[in-house]
Image (tube, rainbow, N blue to C red; front, side):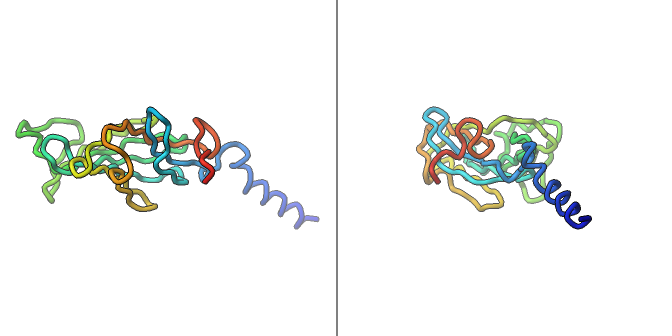
Length: 168
């Protein structure tokens, strides 16, 4: 009887997070067309996942990147940004700004909460947007047309805003 009681307690402890909405494996990151809702990419993602959005700066053509972390509420924490730009010779002053030994710069300790990440897709070859995460790197410019208003969102599978309702 005691062993039966211990097994029940163990099963309840394992299933309680899912019952109260704490099942972090049920989150999905999607990259969509903000205007039409077309889904270009979708991955299961967990809280704590790190995402790096890379692109070429529209003016000086140097690479830039933004780092985000997915929090337990499915929001993005904008951690830091960086690049290989000289800011058009004007210098730059911002809390957390520093030049790095490899010739790049970064602004760290931003820690802004964002509901989504959005941007206009640049021309292939000129902007070269890509997304890096644990699942791999995706060249967004390969599949998304220039001028598309792109939105990256996180939600629960089959839940908010129709996430994961593609028949895949």
